Picture 1 (cartoon, rainbow, N blue to C red):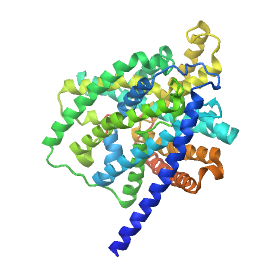
Picture 2: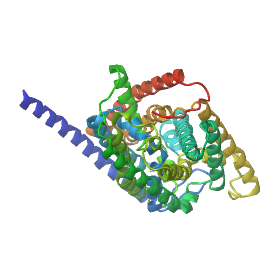
Picture 3: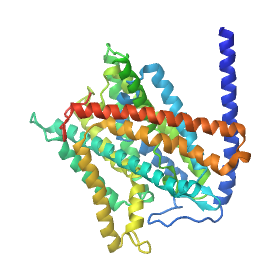
Length: 469
């Protein structure tokens, strides 16, 4: 029986490998053709922001520092604690590799029939029609809004933690005041640094801040892990809680690996846009992933199942180290959050500004003030109303990122290749991705909604959360 099982596993592995290899060969050929097309002339949609200006090294560094943002301070609790060591490491590696492949595939769809798609919704609308355009825009809008709320909450927590270190009062200022301050700082940065390309002058500073709090975190986590002799790595809760927690962790792992905004980020790249984007993705999924995975695993190793939802609140290091980590994480998040919010700014700027004038003309400055104020004002208010970190991460990881990352690229490939060109194994491969990601999206969304209902019953509106478990 064991031999039969082994043979069956080997056969399944070979079939999966053959499907993947067939798919990769077809997609690599298509990408080569599109890179050749991209090296010549193509048409692009009108936009108020810069396109076709940045190197792949700049975009690669932007992705590395963008994904090594303040969210990493919560990933040990959200990703590892609900899964434990075995399933946790396996899911980290599998979902990371799957996200890399899916984004590699999507990067190859940036230029089709001589047209460059600088927005994800434009690509889906071109291939599937107007209805898909609006569906994609809705999903991206949810991604941007929920992701930005998570950044605002993390920034508010960091400021509150710094204030608590210097406050002699046992009742420091409410979390909502720090959320409002964070929203204002994010607004100011988005106003004066309006585009992704304009962020180039801030990359060195962001990278230095990332290194500062990552190194400080790792050092203290190692010290705490060595001194903690009673670590518990068991997954606790009822069977239902374990299952829902595991699916929530899968959604969180997807959040830490992808954004659902690749075409918008790729739009800033110089030609050849496909190969340059894939080089930038290689940097993200090697150097970048090594850091944010490393901190997530180190946090779980140091504290086990008791790891906090916000790591700096659990560190045993000196006061100055806590202040350093929170301060650098807050400052770095100013740059990181902008990367994941720019697409919504681009949509508003393109609609509201005069495209024939510069970004800093008097008219466009006034319109941008209104647009940025509406976005960050609304986001800060809702964040202050519902200050529950896990909800933001799990919900947009489940509801929107599974379709944007896995389903839609495979749908586009099947549509543009057709039955004759795609081949049998290629069709099976992409349909498998579509079906599997659809199921995971439904199940992980249910897990995220369950978490929201739970937190809504525990906390009240405008809750002043002073500790995180």
